[in-house]
Each structure stands twice: as structure tokens, then as C-alpha cells.
Length: 499
Image (cartoon, rainbow, N blue to C red; front, top):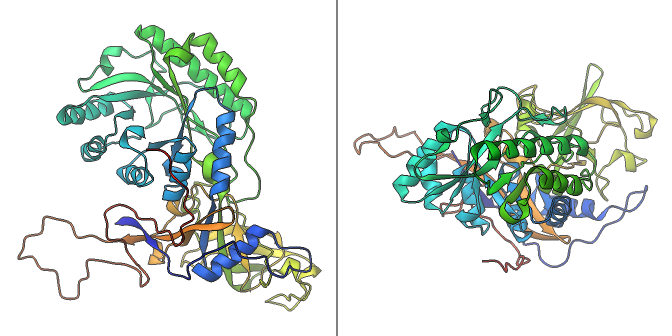
């Protein structure tokens, strides 16, 4: 199956952002909530809303926390939506990619292949050929075998690939975030038993130009993040001395955190710049004149830009627990959560004018027992529409039950939202994805999954009459070109001044 971005039908959103309507009794409606309600009227529910201004601010905040001259990569695995990628290109970031699909998204956003850092384990000959043909020249390699695969395809293409060796070192054991190094792993070359021999990484068609570290991810504790980065710098210095050749690129990875599907703001990393610079000065003297220093981030750059807006379709009670059944589930949010990878989620109700928000409406009554919403809380679970008990958006907690028809927003889901979910499960349409800047719509589209016939069938092998090789949703307005397409219903596009 391929994924394509298809335009979302709906009235063309032109002019200024919708005016805020009559506020609930508890106070004025936040502007972003009023806009969310208007977008639901235009494009339907559920939908993701990405605020591009937040993306720009996040890039500026993270760049300010890093040593001067650092190169900042955006990890497209967090969210490959073309408008987010384009916004980060305009903010001066480069793309870190792990698939030809992410490569296509980077190219569609205006990057050149030469801008990309291509990583990940298990790179195949076919994808390496496609990446090299697109102009990609910088690769992170996980092992000598990975390096040899890159070298073979580079030689066949008549080019030289610049390679970073990803290191699985001992780290600082900071105990924060999800550890990506320091133990058995498919990621990186182990150095626990001694420093590697340079001869193992001298491969025709490649040039070993640097090192890549990624010890942990989603580390909200700046002290732990700093400790891991300093440990990586020490290891890099030891390898440089052991090999007797200067490093020309050092990627210290990421680990920068953002709340996921729960209220809260991005952590501040204001204390990183000076001690990181001091560690580089101590262990890699003269680094600023000879070394390209790089960092990468996904969730920090786009996490707080996104909210998932969904609708309560029914409220029912079962054995002491009230269930709010939503029109969105783990097929739209937290597919990784559905297999136990991410923590339980908490949805945050929106206070919208005209929406039956129980907390803001003194006349709201409980859908199950007729009691007033202000009389107390109940054990409430928010669940999706899928035919599986795993489809839980928020575990049962003491809270005020919602009403059918109410709009809910799940905050901080700009990263690992739609494309990290079970989009193909039960064949429901993907949610709409709407990008906004300064309160105005930039674009609206929807991912679609479709089947494609594979070459190799003999001309006489006809499928049965009732066999339909292509599957799509009834509202699947597919683009006709090969690359993911992003539809702009309005002309509020950023001016691209870069080549």
C-alpha cells in the first residue's frame, strides 16, 4: 500500500480567521478553539490542526539552546507532512530521513537530495539506489555490513557516499527518556569491547567522515541530556585519537522532549549551550574550524504544533464506568500506544461556543442518569470507534463525563500522531490534516491508502471478474502524480526565498 495526500473537500477557506462566537458562561472562547470548531464545520471530524507558527518558534528555541554554528536536522519520522517540513526548511533545518517515502516528502517540501542525512538499519539496495539517484550523499551507517551495502551502490552509481558511523557506546546512563544506546541494539556499532579498527570501515565508494550518536530520546531533564551529550563527545574524541584522523562531522543526536497527547509546554534547554561548547573545546580542540556539529529532533520541533479535534458520538455506562465513544481512535492517534509503546493518553475538552461542553454549560445533563454536570465526577473512559477493546484514547479516570456532540481536543500531537497510528486498521478514512498560520488556513488534505498492482503478471493471467485490485475510500480524491501531493485551498503560502 502507498500513502498519498489527497485534498479534503469542503468550502474554500478564504479571508481572515473565523470570528470567535458567543462564549460559554464561564468566559470567552479561546481563539484556537473557535478556529477548531470552524474547521470541523468545513472539513468534518476528526481532524488534525497544525499551527505552523509554533513550529517556527520551536526551531528558534532549540537553535538558541545549541552551540553556535550547529546544524539542526528535522527527523521526518515524527511527522512528514509537507507543510511542516517546508516550514522547517524555511527555518533553516535540514532533513533526517529513514526511507524513500520520507525522501519524497523532503523533496516535495523543496529540499535537495544533498540536504538529506539518510539513516536507519536495514537499508536495502533498492532504496539506496533511489536515494543516490535523488542526490543523497550523506548516510549514517549502523555496521560494517551496512557500510558495504552503501559502498556497493555508490560504486555502481559512480559516486562517493559520505558516511557517519553510528556508535552504540556505553553512554552516561542518565536514566531519562527512552534509551537508544548502551545495550544490545540494532542501532549502531558496539564499542563496549574496545575501539574499532579503521580498516573495517575503509570501503571503496564511501568516505568515513564522522560519527553519529543517539543515546536517548524524549529526555525532559536537561541535566541528563547534557550528560549523555558530553559522554558522546568523549567517545568521539577517543575514536578520533585512536584512528589518527580528524573528524569532519559529529552528529550528537537528539533527545529533546515534548509532552505527548497531554497538556503542557516544551521543556527549556537554556542551560545546554555553554557546557556543551566547553566540552567540545576540551575534548575536540579547534572543533569550530574543522568540524560540522549536528543535532536532530522530531517531537520538540513539531510536537506542540498539533491538536487532534474529535467528536463524542455517544456516552454510555457499563458497570460503573462511563464511556465516551469518539469518532477517532488508535487508528488516528497513538497506534504505537495501541501496542503498548506510548503512555496512556488524556484528551482535553475544548470550551467552544455552541458545543455541549459540560464544564461550561450549567444546563448540561448527564446522558446516562440525568444528573447535573456540576454534581460530581464519574469514572470516564474515552474510547474510539474500532471493534477492539484496545481502542482506548484515555483510561478511565475521575472526571466530568462529556456529552454526545461535544468536541474534544488532544493537545501536543504534532509528532507521532497520524502517521504513527494504525491508519489501515478497519479501513476507516484517515483524519483530515489542516495547517494554519496566523489563524488562517494554509492547506487541508488527507492521507489515503491504496493498493497498486505489482508488475510480473503474465498477460494471460487475468484476475477474477469480482476482483478489484485497487481499494480506496468513497471520498478518496487521489492525486495523479507519483509523489505525495499537498493541496492548498487558499493562497496564503509562505514565500520561499531559498533555492
